Length: 405
Image (tube, rainbow, N blue to C red; front, side, top):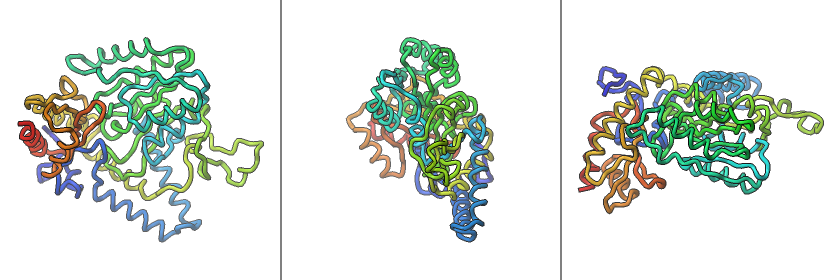
């Protein structure tokens, strides 16, 4: 397994993460450790704001610039214009804020994959109840990479979509990287298929596991709503995410939660004869948010870039996940969810012994090894990143082996 290395023989980024000094960490899909330079960037930004402001004319230009340069960076990673990026607190907000403003009607249908995160599913179900919308399920949980190549996986998914999409289907919800199985979905091909239908169903993509992990530019630019967070694989601060929005969504979706940042002119909010909202992504931004987090996220993204391109980093991650997967498959009573090497750093597996998944997580935590359990499918999930060391993977394997015997 190769990686970007410093003189100590490990990832240069890893050496900047204090959280990795006292544990063997496999929960990047939940939250990535924050590098020390990113924490310092956040603190420095706080200091600047307090020196200039916190609420003075001098500080407003600084804060406005922080927003702009962050959107420009994120827009490049998503293959869209800065005016198509809205900053949010997390993936869920990025999904819900534009979704709930779209022009759905009673009798419409949503097609949601069976591997979506409960937060997004619940939001769609609540909207469906209020609007009289029907929910249909797209089965992707059993689409395995097995002996199939990407083209075969894509064909299987597209055929299922063709079977399930009706003239009433107005929305398809599909994650870029499935949070429970680790499979990557062909978002570009799905987008092209949806555009061939007369009603052109919207495509909402949960990118919680893809941003900072796999290449995102093309897929993000082809989705209608591509919602991501900075605190997982990008190793940025929690409380900051974003969403890339298609021009169609910017035209057709109305603001849902509304605040002063949504407005073109605060002084015209009482004028019912004009549309008071920004006509770009800002109409989905609400009010005061934590500006120093922007500097922290930019720092983390810069540190990731120093480790190599998105393609190079993913190659490194895949080497580690392949090593983990191959050795998990050799352990008695352990069965990986995917039947061959995972396409990402997310490795899920089933423990067939008598120990419940939550108990196994607790036992591993006692020796400083941290993974997580997944409810559906009921399994365990370990995430490897460019900062993961081979001896940490060996320790995880050995502990799992001992627990199962």
